[in-house]
Structures are given as structure tokens and as C-alpha cells.
Image (cartoon, rainbow, N blue to C red; front, side):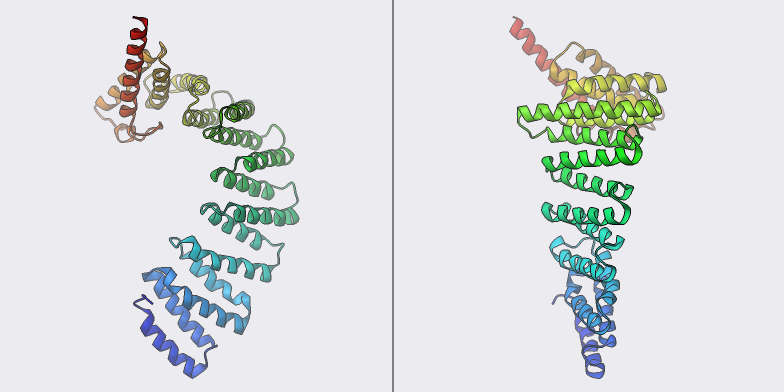
Length: 364
């Protein structure tokens, strides 16, 4: 025992046991007080033995429902606790809620989701998936198979599969989500558009670690899903809308991340044209787009690299030299592939000149 507060509290609790008996509300109250103090001032893990003893007394006296309050309190204070210490108590809370509210209840569905998200960030994927499928089954009974609640739960299932890179499951989950949203909201709805765009980004991300044939297939699916989703957004909001711009930006990032510059280039050019029209040719919002174009052209050693690098450097210099450079603090954190914008442009320039020397050397 390493708790500073435990010895004195345990002496007090021993006195309560002699006076009221070991299984009494008074002893439970003393243990609860000790748990609260440890959670407030020390590591909540140190409180677990006293919490379990308190829960056993409460259950013996008043039934399992009486333990929910103390379980909720401790779990709510256990944000930094290792999952292996948290898991038994969260499973216990799930069992209690199942007993108290019944399997087919919103409380059990929510607890399954909460526990699955803990599993999903701590690798036991199959446990997380089983809990999410359990939650979906409950929501289908409560709200109907084609309901918003079920669609949201399926989205969480797809998100968990994608985060842990279970790509076969991801594809099935995304298709399931898409079909649900088409039934609920309509085939040309905004929700379907966003589902398609999310699928496109997942397919692009899935291509990064795949072999050549599989990679091309993933990229093909990404392109198809993105085009379909973007068409729906354009139809609903207009070709130059913020919704379309946000979709272009998200897909550009995904393509750049998986080194598919040729896929990103037309999207970058389109987004650049939209924002030049909206904000002017020297707007700060253009800098990251110009930088990505410059980097891609430099990597591929094409003629567009030099003028794009020159324009990017000129814009960066203008922003930094302004009399009131309100944009200066944000420049280092602009969207891009790591490091600051200046560092990215310098590397791209070096790459372009290196490729140029190789080309002239080969020509000579």
C-alpha cells in the first residue's frame, strides 16, 4: 500500500466495523470517503481495492443497482488510468446495467459503445467490434434497422476498423453505412455525399501500405467514391461552396499523404482557382496550396516547378515582411506535410535543382 491517506482512514473504518459490522452502510461510507480522497489527490488505481470492497458491501445490502453511482464516479475520474486497470470495472458496470436495465436498453447500448471505444484505442480490436455489433443489434431493436441511431453506430464501427487498419472490415462497414444512409436520407442527400467522401479518404489511406496491385485498386475506389460524393455536394451547395472546398482540401491531404501527387494536382489547381477568385491572388489562404503544388512539381521535375516555387517564396516573403504581419504566428502551422512552410519550400527547391542537374548531366 502506497497511499498516504489510507492508514488513518483504515483505522477509522476498523472502528466502524467493530461498531456496525463489516457489511454495513457506515463501513461503505467510510470506504467511499477514502476512495474519493485518493482519486482527488493520488493515483486512482490505489483506490481500486477499497472501491471493490465498498461495491461488495453495497451489492450485499442493496443489490447491484446501488453500485452504479460509485462505479460511475470512479470511472469518471480515471481518465489517465491504464486500460488494464480500468477494464474490469467498466465490464462490471456493463454487467450491472444489463441486469438493471435489460439487454435491450439505451443504457447498455451506450455502455457497449463507450467500452468499445476504449478497446479501439488499446488494440483489442475483436473485443471492440463485438461490443459495437452488440450495440448495433440493440439499437436495431429499439429504433429499427434503418434508423439514424443505427447509422451512427455503424459509422463508429467503420471508424474503429479504419483506425486499427482492418481494411477488409472497413470496406464492409463503409458499404453498410452507405446503404443505410441511402435508405434513411435518400440517395442524393448530403449525408450520402459525406459518407462517400469519408470512404474515399479511407481508401486512400488504405493504399499506403499495400502491394502495387492492391494499392491501385484502393486508389481506384478512392477516386470513384470521391467523385460521386463531390458531385452530390456540388449539386446541393454549388461548385465553389465552402462544402466543396472542404471536401477538396480533405482529399488533397489524403492523396498527398499516400504520395499520389498526380491525383492531388487537379484538385489543388481547382481549389487554387476557387480561392483566387474569392480572396485574390495574394491571399494567405493560397500559400499551402501553392506549397503543395511546388513540392509535387519539384519531386517530379517538371517545368511547372520553378515558377510555382518562385510564386510560393514570393508570397511567403510578402506575408513575413508585412508591416502588421498578423498572419506570421500561423505560417509555421499551415497545412502541409510536416515542418514549417519555409522548410518545405527549401527542400522542394533543393530537390528541383538536384533533379535539374541530373537531367542536364544526362543530356550532356
